[in-house]
Length: 233
Image (tube, rainbow, N blue to C red; front, side, top):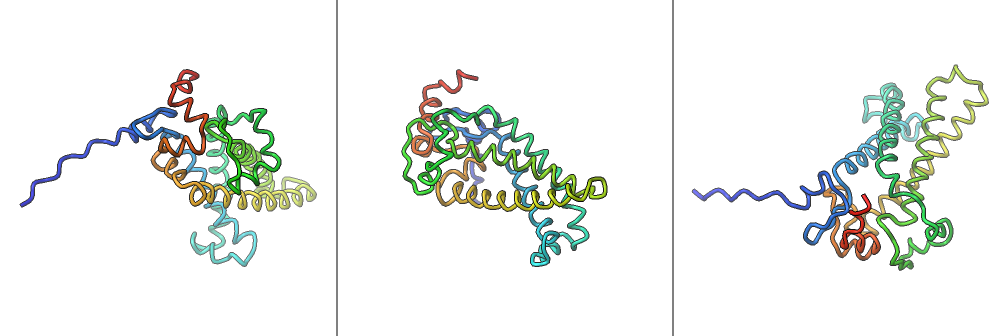
């Protein structure tokens, strides 16, 4: 009979990532604490529940999705409540991350060609902080999109309480914002997985390697390693 394997100690980086951010642990840097990750995945889960319950309501082409929830009638009941959960989670995420999401003057060119340069790996900016200009713009766009979905969704939830013209505008707004959201999420997933290996792990484990931080967010890396980021808190 073989002897039992010794108990493996807790991973010190994961332990640090439960409560802290922007700290170095060996060859890793804590990027997202447990609260940030939990909120992020709650937003993602509720968003996709909204997608899979809303698409069959939107068009019969996606009627098969309704069967995942027990039919179209059930999907119609779940969808608005999932939308409420999505908005609440989005509000929590907004206040969790807003302190890092102020657009700096040097990042305003992300509104122009720099976003396309980034997608083609043509940017090399040594002053990129914890989040680059594109990530900050996506944050604000997602916040405005969540607000638009909430307002238009409330009108659609209680159609008899509002004038017909408002209802027509609500349907158009809800559809357009959803399409933009869906496109944005596709790019968000791509950039967080295939485009930048190591990024997805920061939302699972909470940490990134020093090499990843130095490559993608050099100013943040310098601040964390020097302790400057921690002194600002």
